Length: 302
Image (tube, rainbow, N blue to C red):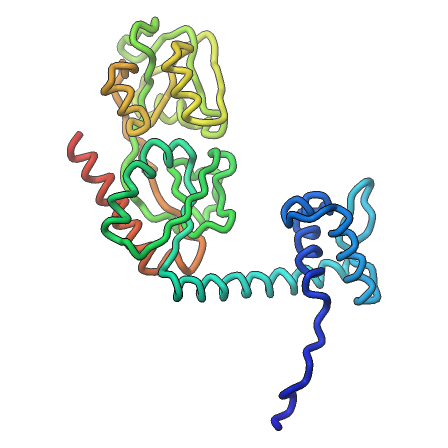
């Protein structure tokens, strides 16, 4: 018998490792319990059992919470790496059994108003690909396990992430408001009682002014955390919102919104930032090619 064959593995309590990793990552037993769907007491008992098995404490008290100590941090690195590898291996098995999958993160407004209504065309061309969407606010638009993140405003991303961005198509923004809203446009200026801003893309109005040379003069500003709320506020006559033309197209065609200045292109454009090896696989290539073609076709059609 080869050396080591048949020997039982010496492993810590495996169920306790998940509780430990979640508590270490979240710095909270309560949040770990919520993530794992367990009670606070159950997670505490699992962590206690792990510490007893190790013979050393893994956490120190920090006020009313907990904090990893040196031994805990060393174990966390090992456990996190092992769980990452296990997750990746499990995903590969599932993909081989059920077909390729792709996890895409994008803003909720982009998903609702552009991506999801058009996904039938993608699935029709690629019926074997399974797409998972994470729809978030712009503030939360980060990797979070996604293979691709779709965004136009990438200023908050690290330079290395911005450098890896894969162009998808152009974007163009313009002020929109309800018909009859008191907005005045003169050479070099747009004046209105209030403008509407998206809280988590604060550069948009400044970029539009830079692109158009048009100064925005509004006595008040309303802020909302989601673009679709900005759109609804404009529809409700609360002010002038700055929207990407695709997000406003349906309301403009229905006559529910007006675009007194038209739309100006932003140089950055829409792009997908890859965050995993699957972002280079055939499913991702098919999805990105479909997105580019769909966006280009709409631009060509006006």
